[in-house]
Structure formats: C-alpha cells, structure tokens
Amino acid sequence: MAYEGEPLHTVLRSATKEVVLGHDQRFCLIGERINPTGRRIFQEALRAGDFSAIEKDVKAQVEGGADVLDVNMGVPLTDEPDLLAKAIRMVQELTDLPICIDSSVVEALEAGLAAYEGRALVNSVTAEDDRLAAILPLVKKYDAAIIALPNDHDEIPMEADKRLDLTGKIIRVATEDYGIAVADIVIDPLAMPIGADTGTSLVTWETMRRIRDEFGVNMTCGASNTSFGMPDRHTLNSVWLPMAMTQGLTSAIMDARTPQIVDAVKAADVFMNHDDWGMAWISAHRAKAAAATAP
Image 1 (cartoon, rainbow, N blue to C red):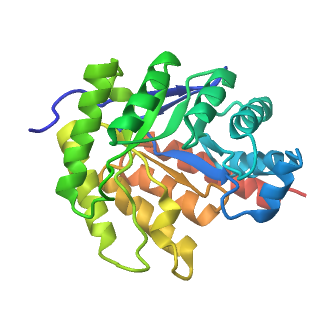
Image 2 (tube, rainbow, N blue to C red):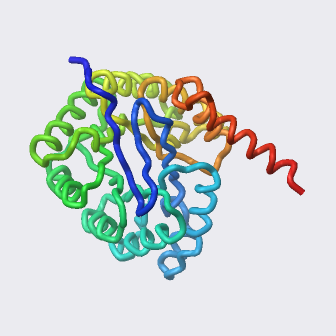
C-alpha cells in the first residue's frame, strides 16, 4: 500500500531555532563529531572533567554547515547520565542548533532530555519489544522525535523485506501504543559498510525507496558507516549521500566538517528542487568567494 498523504515534517527545535526534516525540504545535516567512540584522548579528557574539545567540535561543525548536532557521551567508567546532561547544557550555550541526544542508556537519555531546552531528536531505538517499551514513553513524555532502527533480537536483517516488516512494527507500536505522531518517527534504513560487501548499499537504497513510498516517513543514517574499511572515504561518502537522497534519505548523521561531503549534499538539493532557485547554493558560493578574497 502506497503512502498518499502530504509530506511528513519532523520538527526539531532549540530554544530559538527550528529545523524541519521532510521529503520536500532541504537535506538535514546532523553533525556526528561530538562522540567519544574511537577518540581515546577525548575520552580521557571527559573522564577528567575537561569539556574543551566539545567547544572546538561545535565550532567546526557549525562553520561546516551542520543543521543539528548529535551529542553522545558514551565513555566507559563514567556516569553517562551526568556527563550527557552537562554536555547538552554546554552545547546549548555554544550554539542555537537543535540537538540529537544519542545514547543506548535509558537513564542517560532521560537526563539529556530533562536538560534540553527544545524539541530533541532521540538516537535511537530498535524494534525489540523491551527497547520500545523503555524508550518510547520518554519520547512521548518529552515531546521528542525518535530515530528507529529496523533490527531486532534476532539480527540486523540483510534483506529489504525484513527491514520493511520491522519498520511497520515500529510505526504501529509507536503510534498506536504510545500516541507518537508518525511524523516524529525517523527510520534508519541501516547503512552498512561496503568494505566487506559492495552490494550492501543496493539493499539499503531499496529499503529507503520502499520506506518512502509505503510509509512516507523521514529517514536518517550514520552515513560514515558506508565507507568504513575503504580508502578515500570522503570521496565515497560524497557520492553515496546524493544517491541515497534520490531514494528518500532526508537527513544523515555525518561529517559536517568536510566541505567535499557537505557541498555534494547541497548540490543534490539544487538538482532535487529542494533549494528554491538555487539561492542557498548561490549564497554559499558568494560567501566562499568573498572569504577567499578578503585581506
């Protein structure tokens, strides 16, 4: 059954700024950098109570063109709820961009949501019954939006059909059992690394296309995952994202510090008629030209 309604808009807010995800909107860049995974020095600093790297990461991503900032404080041997709440309060002081609160720990998500002044995106939930029951009440309580991954206890499904089935389950449970608006459910179609199997993106794109056509919901993914294990990752990511956009991807958790990737996305917005008269593209070009010639 095809989705035939109006485009669904996922609205995120800081205290002063609103960002809208939608199939008729410009692509939403969610900056991935405020995440200690694989960053040993950053982890050590956070354990010591040093948050200075966050300030640098916020500045670089805002300057790079991020629309939303993902904040993850998953540092082993720390009080993650306290750490996440402190980081979110700090990020809010540094920028007016909305925040994506990123944790697998339910207590940390609640602490982050309580500290946030706005309408957050929560990253994330899976189709597992216990995870849905633990996280969706928080999403409803704090009037947030949710990223949901179509995998369950059994597996990360490699077939589009199973991903579609689990997407349907997530949407059904969230809307019928918890009263969450379908527009506030953002599906991650599971972008897998191509290093081991270059065919994985074909399945992901099929999944995106079918989710868009059957459910109409917005989608996001960890875009950097796709090139893991391959050389020249920036080039691969800058090609993959525009191709994914044509299949229905409306946002991505991505490296907003890399002009090659950001420019590719913004160029795709022009060709997809999501940048009226190309004015955002033209304005950005003029700003770069002015910066290059400034004394």
